[in-house]
Image 1 (cartoon, chains in turn red, cyan):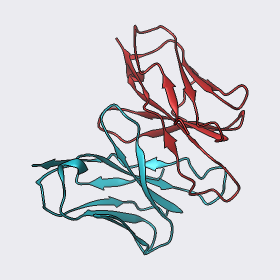
Image 2 (cartoon, helix red, strand yellow):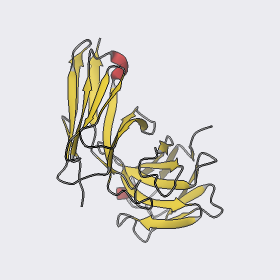
Image 3 (cartoon, chains in turn red, orange):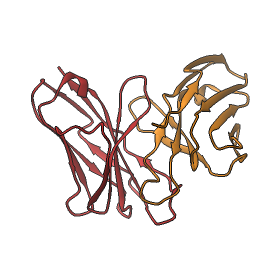
Image 4 (cartoon, chains in turn orange, cyan):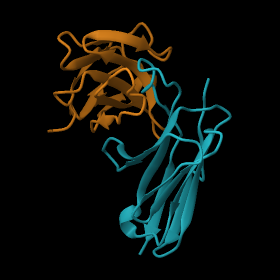
Length: 117
Length: 115
């Protein structure tokens, strides 16, 4: 168990540019989640995958955001035409999901901190 | 929209003191989790409580889930500087597998234990 890995750790970009983040979950975990955390707040749910299927998206995820998990392993989160309000820590988490796994623990990565100037 | 309110938001106390952090909601959650987060890192799960009235202990930390599953508390006995960090509560809104880990987080309690 090497943990959830996120790259890059930090990203500074200019407004209007596109950015892409990568998340490598724990290998045997079939569920993968993206959360966003702004300063002084708790994480907010963005979207999640079960294997390669994106099952739910938050209303926070505007059309400029897209997430993929093409082979049910790693995931990417892309933000197009970034805005200053996108500045936040983007956290990825994974878990082992089953029908009755309503309390299976999430394992979080250390996040990608995005700063849009 | 389900919300979790944590109080206090900031707490600074001396080593050896006891403290309690509260997590309240008007909504019912199927389970409640407590995380601790260090600067520059992701949250790390401390405990999950599932049953109304449940109490779990983790060394000097005691976690309780309210009878109605709407609130929770974290009590730390004889706090130590190593307990310093951001404590987050998170509720799971649904028992069904698909929606279960769409966690609703509180805004966190930033705890500082002074030597």
